[in-house]
Length: 142
Figure 1 (cartoon, one colour):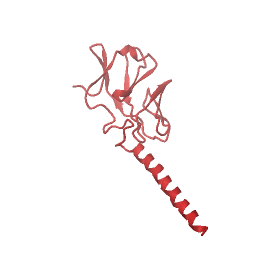
Figure 2 (cartoon, helix red, strand yellow; figure 1 turned 30 degrees about the horizontal axis):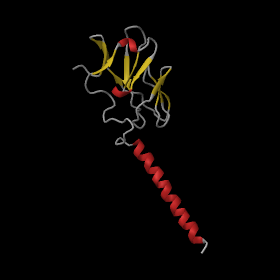
Figure 3 (cartoon, one colour; figure 1 turned 60 degrees about the vertical axis):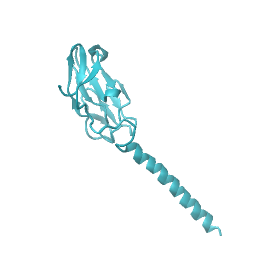
Figure 4 (cartoon, one colour; figure 1 turned 90 degrees about the vertical axis):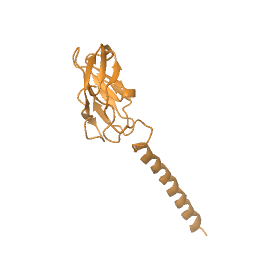
């Protein structure tokens, strides 16, 4: 019967697509291992390193600490969460003060936290940052 192989093929294609769609869901879920965190900002002070590591007029991504820091002027620092506000993925690079989300292509101005390209619509949350003992410290004061 010519109709049966086509039906079987359709079922198999549907199963394959469902499997691929399932991968997409797990990649975007907060349970995946792609850099998501329950809290997008540090809940305790986090040492980042020497303030000089952030160039004046530039930004630096501290991926392990989930923070991006900019230096608008010598001795001034601004910090934001490095977790995308769209699906929670961690930014993977910063070039020319633009943070890149590898999951869906959102871009953020790392000097303001504002979205420059979607699908994200919300800005990156601000993170307190200060120089303490010659080191940059992000997060709330202890």
